[in-house]
Length: 225
Image 1 (tube, helix red, strand yellow):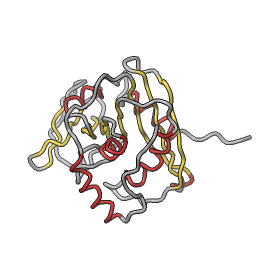
Image 2 (cartoon, rainbow, N blue to C red; image 1 turned 90 degrees about the horizontal axis):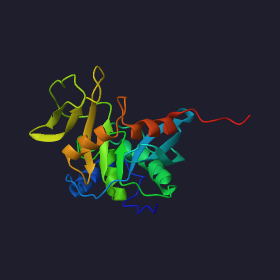
Image 3 (spheres, helix red, strand yellow; image 1 turned 135 degrees about the horizontal axis):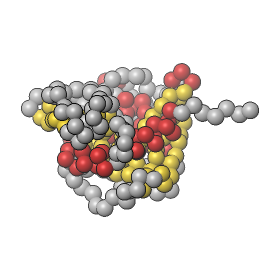
């Protein structure tokens, strides 16, 4: 894949927050995509006590959810850990991994937030905008917003609210497990985001896209003998 960089990455946290606020105005929270034959999971891990960022992209055929191809990239970690600014710490390595793919996914499911973010510009929104690919944020924890209790039933969800705005959904993917925080990233609406997360599930709490990407991003690297 060819990546067109939109901005520099050597920013201060204050500059990064200002950039998020500007770019958030370009996010499209409605369905803007055609048939989906490939879904991709994106996840990031760290090596060398955080000095190295390890990003993984797993591309699965849909609807079989079989792994079609994958890519891993490692880059030095340049940006500090700041809640709400994880995309500036993680996306450079993700883009390097995306460049190594020989196919273009039709839909991205990111381990992180979409618009369920203080400035409505989480990693799924950031990545979706840079790649111009529909993207969904699928997070394991809440970053912002409030919600009611989710019924303990597979597929049940309640709105995630910030002020008077619905910024995502709290989705129960299995009974008796913690829900996921799903939000549109870019070029997709909330109802479709929920439907696609459910379509990428098997018998686990996390969608197969996330499970494959996490495995690639976080498993211990092999050491030479």
